[in-house]
Length: 463
Image 1 (cartoon, rainbow, N blue to C red):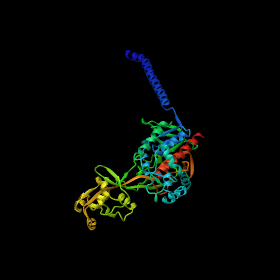
Image 2 (tube, helix red, strand yellow):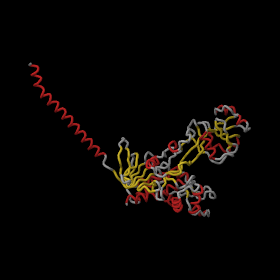
Image 3 (cartoon, one colour):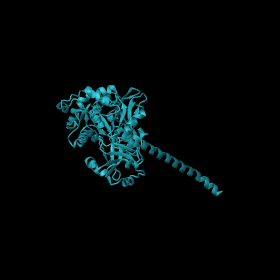
């Protein structure tokens, strides 16, 4: 009886303690949730600017500068790229332009009309007519535009008769000067460089461009609001497996791996109009498998030179086209493609500059053993003069033609209609040069689109 009475006496106390414990738990939980919401609110204060430029290429930097000069507040998202990563490539490829001082000195009459015909003919007339017309009319300003920007004169014509439009610089340090000037101008400008990774372009329910969805280094995902966005991260030479699944890759080297096609992936999500996705900037490379080094091979055929693979297929360089040789390399078994130079005289005259890539053999038996050839009758039957020099070969790709279809002002299209507020600039744009690219076109396109698109994106944002 006493135990039961004691139990009933403790019951209200236990109940009160339980109530206080539960109340305290919920109170602490509410306080924690409120603090968390406050912290999120503080860390997620919405950011906004007029124009966003996506990419770290020269086109992205120049477009950012142009938009800022036109009064826009600009955020630049390198999106994983090194700033100015393609500057050396652009500079070394030269400048394609009409009516420039070097041409005048040589009395070469290359009018914008003739320049437009060059592009159309080389590209198979697959160009966007309005884009080509605008580019042609702007071509006389490319030379002074580039010189004014970085102080470098492109005063050398490599082949005045066959390539009167192509200009190079005699300045050996020109590429580094170009990149340095890009970064110097950027640092002096009001452009704000953002390190967040862009994952998506957001639109309002009415279809108006509204924001970029970005992710920071901590993994937080949030929007930053803009009135216009420019995709300018270059082509997709580093993303062949996504765009060209039919290609074998083991015999290929991507010469510009930074261009992974991130901008094209964003555009693809939205279903924008794309063009010319199947044409390559092809290089044939001498390859050193031990050092993993390569050197670009000139397209001019060498005497007594052949290409063969471990399957015993042989090509005579003087009889095979460049496209045939490139295809032969990509389709051959991995690490089993070779260049064969026969004769000491030929080697000394042509291949000495590539000495580190060649191995010398005095007889075909040793050569066959070194290259895993099981049958050498296809070589012995040719009665080649020893010694024999062989080098590994790889196929190199430095850009892939094609990309987003735009207007002459860089406005992106979907089903032939302009997507308001969305732009593209530089090598990410397709429809200008058709199925081939003249030497010097990448730099010229960069200057052209940076000027047109930067100005247009800034004016649209201000509207």
